[in-house]
Structure formats: structure tokens, C-alpha cells
Length: 379
Ligand code: ZN
Ligand code: CA
Image (cartoon, rainbow, N blue to C red; front, side):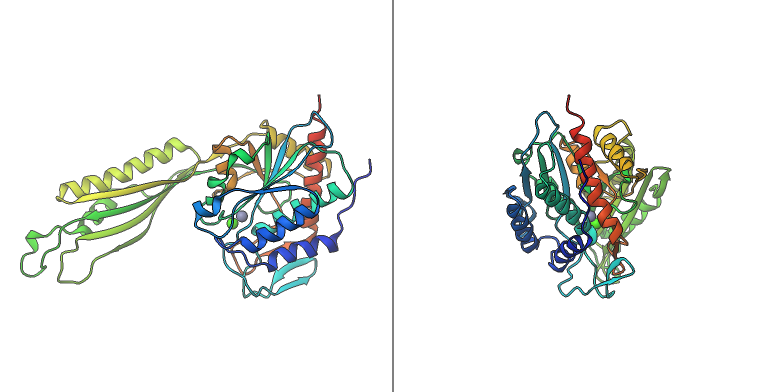
């Protein structure tokens, strides 16, 4: 079987078209409609769930299915997210020296339109050339950048896949994210009692003093090699002549070992509660698991398949840890095995964001190689 070549012009056209559709989190509808049309044009069955409501946005997650044309092959998915970290309504895209970037005044949106365009182009090539494949689903989510909200809300009754690949990381193409931390965030209200600071300060309870006392006793910063904790914001107080009745604090803790996050968070809560108690105030703490970490080895099925596929097209497939989460954290926690693979996006979340066109094309090749690799799993 000859392997079709990726047509760079057409791929660039697709990628830049996606980038030109403004799609910040919660406002993805236009790009969702475009992708829906693209996939329906290729004959895929396209469904939406009801995530818009859950994420308070204007668009749903999209689940598209390409039925198998050979039997006995595992069902796989490819995933990417629609939303970008910032709006870029008037993006000016510049092609220069094999790179695509903006004029520097906006983000490009390669996070994650590099991933999405590579998946879409691979599917177009599969359909046009009638390449053999098992069932392939595309799980395209909304609101990834604001807390993996789309993936959390994804209607799993639409998903029928054994394992998959999340296209949402940077080069080298084919690199595999081996582990991510578990990440908790905490909102704390420390409550004291107001009093006139000059007339009767002894009747007040200073929330600022509670905060100071709690924080000086708290282990923060780098806790150990894989665990960190931080107080990010602190607000409180109205005037110098009022004993401060309330302080609001936002904090986080992360570790590659979930039990260590749990321990760190328990320690922080204890510091706040104890300090409040000692002074007759109290602490209200709202804890949220931002995402659950995971650890993958080269023996996990999606990793094995992605690495074998990458090597067959001459790519190295290094395993690397990362400090942030992606939709894969949610998919794995919800029982959908997958791994994140490197795509063309670079300098994401900045106005210097760019892609190398050769990496875009490589990501398409990788998707095609993954499909071929899965075909070989037929008994
Ligand atoms: Zn992303
Ligand atoms: Ca991102």
C-alpha cells in the first residue's frame, strides 16, 4: 500500500482557516460549525452533546464517528480542543521561513488548532484514499483552557472508543506526555470581627492577623521534588481604622503523587483553621480538584501504539513529564485510556506563538501511522 503524501498547501489552508475563526473559551460556536461542516462533507456522523449548558458557553463538544471499513480492529479516538486562551478576532497570519505566526499583536491559536487541523487533515486523507481503518472517533471539546470544563462535561454515552490520542502538546511531534501532577486549588475566607481600631480594638478579631499567623506556619513553595504549593492572592481590609473582619486567599498545591497533594492540602487547611480558632475567628475553605494526575509507562497501550507509529515514520518518541493538565487528565480519570502526543504548537499562550509547517505535516503523518499501527492489532 502506498502512503499518501501530506499536501502542505491544503494543510496550511485548513490550519489558517481554523486560526482565523475567533474561538476563545465559551465562544467556540463558529469554529464548531465549521468543523461540523468539514466532517459532514467527508461523510462522518457528527453529534453534539449538551456541554454548552454545563460550561455556560455557546457551543457543545463534538463527537464525530468514522465507521470501520475493516473488522476486528480496536476503536480509537483522536482529540483536540476548540477554544483558545485569548480572543484573536483580527489575527494577521504571517508565513515566513517555513513558520506560521502572527504579527505579534495576538495569539495564533495553534493551541490547539495545530492539533485539530492535523487530525482533520489525516481524516480527510483516510476518507479520500479509502485507507483501511477501524472505527475512529474525534472528540473535540470546548472550554479546555478554563479548567478542562468541556471534557468534564463530555457526554460519554456518545463515546465508543477503546483508547485514544490527545493532540495537545508541543514538539517534538510524537513526544508522549508521561505524567502530569494532580492539581488542587483552594479558596479561603478567613473571618474575624470588625471593631473601631482606635476606640475598641480589643473587641475586634483581625482576619489579617489570622492570615499572617496561618501563613507563617505553612510549608509553601517547593515541598519536595514533585510537590509544590503556593498562596497566589490575598485580599482584605477596608481602612486603617477598622480591625479587618475578612481576608480572602487563593492558593494551590500540585504533586505528581496524589497522596502528597492530599497531605499538603490537609496541612494548609489545618494551618488556616488552627490560626482562626486560636484567635476566635473562623475559616471557610472551598477546595477543588482542578485535575487528577496520571502516570503512563511505555507499556500502556496508547503509549505503545503512538511510539511504535512514530518510530515507523522516523520520529523519536521521547516520554516527558509536564507540569500542567489537559483534557487527557479528565478522559483518563473518566475511564478513557489515552495519551497526549506532541504536535506543532510552540510558544503557546503568547503572542509569539508559532508552528513549523513541517511539524504540522508530521503530525498528520503521525495520525496516519497510528491508524496503520492499530490496523495491525487485528488478531
Ligand atoms: Zn491546549
Ligand atoms: Ca493551552
